[in-house]
Image (cartoon, rainbow, N blue to C red; front, side):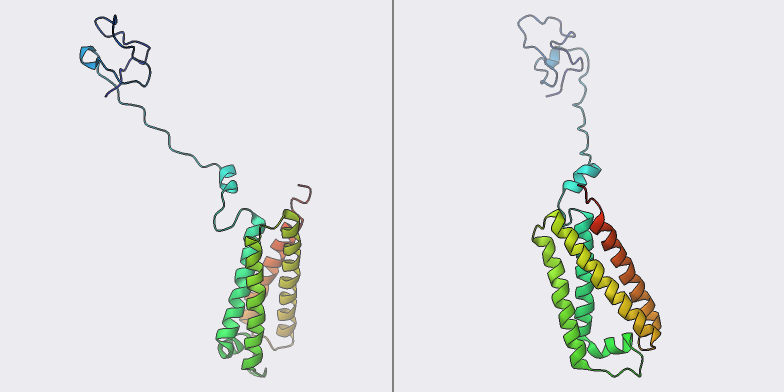
Length: 191
């Protein structure tokens, strides 16, 4: 039923309120036919607003903080490198190394397998509900591993063994990820 537009305890527009049911705010206007004023529609509910704080509290794909996000990025990229090495060792050899570097399909696959194990371990850390201190330790470990990868790529580029275009891009990515992990590993230390 429509609501009385007056919004008061009793409808002042009725000829007589004696013996009638009161019209409370939000209650149906039971004697609407006797009210001379047209009813107004019920108010439109306000849309739910999602605040920044409520987004931080939500768990979406196990990401509840920047720490988790960085651990996942580290795990996914390490896993991606590993899968590409294990699945397509000859292609990866040609992509990453200069022609004079001896190729070994078996060693490239084993290297890929090692990266797969490291990547899946990093991803599993997000599902283990680590404490903040444990996440900071894991980020420090990621800092070291990504910095070492960048250092090795740089050395091999300088030695003329690593393909420079892919080496520069991969090194820049590894340095960026190492720096992000280093910053996050010390952030919120007092909290």
